Length: 579
Ligand SMILES: Nc1ncnc2c1ncn2[C@@H]1O[C@H](COP(=O)(O)OP(=O)(O)OP(=O)(O)O)[C@@H](O)[C@H]1O
Image 1 (cartoon, rainbow, N blue to C red):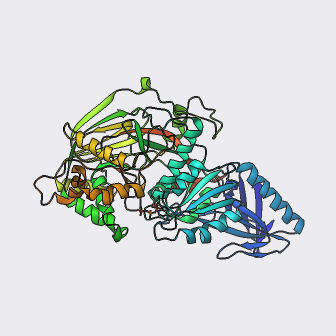
Image 2 (image 1 turned 60 degrees about the horizontal axis):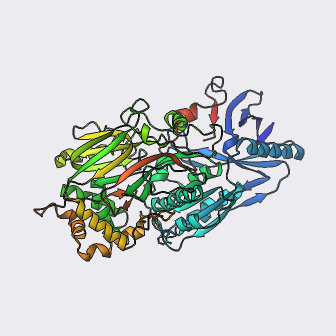
Image 3 (image 1 turned 180 degrees about the vertical axis):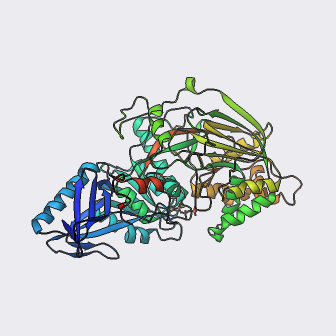
């Protein structure tokens, strides 16, 4: 027996769950709360509080249990986690000590993959510039409670986090965490992938090459103005929820798309590689950064009104249509079977029992299949390795895309009238099928190539050379990836370099001349996870499960609330994780 306040409970710690059942005066069982041991954050002697400030009252018959608490069933904030806390009173000090010891032992046994030491990068300028405050007030106390040590670096410049991961000794760290937005995540992504390839002696510049998947986990504490990767892998943008996923050592593999130009790696992407509409919107929004996050809405309207479309040829390698399809109406949710079955296909030589075994994705030219080619005028071309859902588009760019099946969804929107294109865009904000339109096609692919029509590619090369001269790209033989990061790309594409008047720079400036100019621009720009790419002719290849995030994908509400150790016998009285 344990007491919470004056109420008596029957508590059991059995295998994977710690449960407590309320008893009435006649010893009849009422509601049960059941917490998976894997979701226990900490067990402390006495009455302990951590929020708003740490307070310890060392009473000798009490202990405090901290655990993951989900927002209530049917809540509008699906996926939101908070820190649950319950003070238990035991009949004696001895029994209290036994409970604490047993719970801590269970925690060690059932949660072997929790991190012990993290390297945290805070971007003090991301989003609303609250990164430091968010970390110190909301995240650090939780890490301390869970016994996780952290080394914090407050960045002083763009790419500092990436360079640190690439060059510094990371012995002892289980994972790297960013406090910032998608740009900071991208720095960590490039650092972790680059470092892993360096250590494996592999070149990132070989577009058909095999990449080593990364053991160092990445955590995201959302504190940016765009936190799409966090939203798509956790389901909400909330620092506490993300911190709790990190603490319990959740592990979500993620496909990564490597973007190459000729024989050089340009960048890695996890959410969107987009040409045409999405490229133009980013380029236009970069010119209005002073507007803050509103710039995206403004740029979206302006680019839509310009009604541009672009000529080009898209070639792609289809993924196996027998495994899944972008129109099969499924959703990639936590524990997705398509993604878990893909592991064996992607890493047939790995020891399936070990999450951390050394593994190489098994791409080979022989098994690639035939390239399909589509030419024409496109309003937009998008490749996404995940649904890319976000608060504005809850189902995302491709609602049935998977996080970790080694494929991406290629969405081709052919030239059409402005009203039809508006219908396509609008459907992203509703549950209507955006692919059920005659000018839209979607393919599940492993690789994509894009080329410009004859006559356009010279100018593209000219720009490429100019960018290389300006230092956007580093030498291909250099082992680490040179990402044309936000700052660099802004500097060289959106910033002063654009104003120099080369043919391409002129073209860039004329994005919005469709309304008034007789000769609209022939070439758009690629948007790669919110960065402008310095090249137009690119090739993309999806590397299955290349990195791992401290996340678990979006949880299926029905599964969570229906999941209970003995749900068949509890007659609905049983609650997994208290509300
Ligand atoms: N100390 C720093 N000074 C300037 N830039 C930085 C610093 N630290 C990180 N950065 C860069 O700032 C960029 C944006 O950061 P982040 O993604 O955290 O915020 P954000 O508000 O979501 O960004 P944005 O709105 O520009 O997309 C990143 O690409 C990162 O490289």
